[in-house]
Image (tube, rainbow, N blue to C red; front, side, top):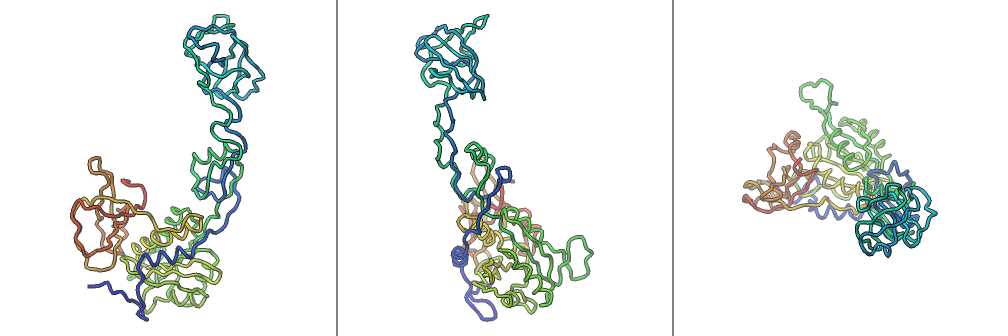
Length: 419
């Protein structure tokens, strides 16, 4: 039975995942901000409040096509009023109405002085010569109108950071007059994969070689996390290959190096980083998959994450650790991914490993039972084909316990549920 709590050449204690998260949480602060145009702000993280540059609406306006009237003139159905003219959207009213008068008005147009209501066009009958209008129903003050400043006042904060700007929030920013927005700098993440057995996809393989999958996978994950990946390719398991690649990687604020992090004779990455001034804050977490995960800080404050080489381990560790680093640098709280509760669709048997497990799983919304989950068919940390079936990670804090069908469990969503 596996699951020892010490690990490594120096037999150091494996951290719990909560301890590892706490270390990262304490180390990550926002990267900084920059100004971008409104048109380039989609999905950027707002770093400074946006305040309204004027009242909204900036004038009393009509909310329907119809006639601007004095409600006092239309207290009873059947009033007939003299039409003075037209108030069009985008125009300056410059008009005022008195007793027994009305102005035809378009949606969005300023109310003429003296008017306090709008009667919908379908509730009126204009005369054939266009000089008078018959009001079918009684009108009340304020109907079909929006008062100046009724939505926001000048100087009100309309968007508060940190938020990732979506289409609706950009509409709010535009309405508030924000032509430029202060947003967090996009986090650049350098990616390195290590291993003599790896070859780029598309090149012919020899016996003992495999296609390199972690680079494309991690680049896609970083884009999903709204970071900018910088893929430096494959480094062979020699110091002469590793050191130049790692030196180049340290030009980025975040570095993800996959492979070479365990205890084999060619696992050279930790020592190579140390030669370049990296200080490891932890190496080894009591979890499955992903035990060899490491985190440290570079000589200029870079965040260094050493990922296991197997693709599922690398994927899981990127979700559980690299994601929170990127989010923290973007100005969000540096927190691990949230969990949701779901019901097991079938019995889950005990695992033979004591380590808390993060199992690729499928979650879907059942119309009768709500969110349901079951592990996907996968064969371990070197099986990306099984991982490709998953949209969540099933959290098994006590993996040696059998879980019956119908049990409520924690899951970490990886994308759109049910997709």
